[in-house]
Image (tube, rainbow, N blue to C red; front, side, top):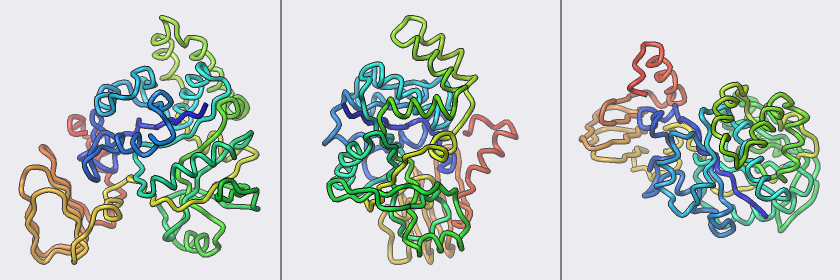
Length: 355
């Protein structure tokens, strides 16, 4: 069977002060009337019934997400005592799915993406399941700009086509480039953005963990041995804090063989910072994006994400203004990727209650 794994454990520090430790971005309504987690489940329902949708999240966030999507079985929420990065989270999901279906295929999705072309997205997921017969499949996004905010995938030779979707061998994964390099990559037509979405057979990814992350694999097998047993939670609480933090890109993908990429255009946006909302929420004639009560005079290229209070601005431009019940955050648009620095400052000055 084919399973969808939704990664829903991030803290979303670049979306502070709205996204908090106890109420992270995946639980928020940032675009439209649904939360990011609700959108993540809704857009795949045409091919994945609730019993084959799995969410990996922190234990403290599970009650919030369960309440938002009550049709998902409670047992499909895989809980981490604390976040250890995407590689351990994916490994944990893999052993849970293998326990139910050793022949399963799994797609890795995240709850902080927004996708407008849902029909095409589901079509490429269906195609990717067939391509993932012994391969590791990455979903690449056809670049619309020379972005420095994403990693890139270098496409090699055409490896085949499935249901109208060509797929290519992967030459290498490249970390976030500088602007000049990003322009060169985009102009070449040989690169796609690394979306962080992957498809593979559960047995295959576990073999990769055994080969490339042997220490973690040994820890994972201890957890696997406790699945379904009364002492499972105690095993997790003992082992998981000892697991090294690692991303799936560094831990597995960069060193794996037989990796292919399917580049697609699906109306994809990674909602990783306040600036990403400029691409999703309609702007006015002065390129302003406003959510919540506001007054603006002579204001340009500014985002206001309000709450209950009126936010009034005049004679400003290129700002991000976020108003919550206990914090007002103002920063320049060119620094919106650095909002997490404010969170770090609050940690260092022992103002943990605000994060």
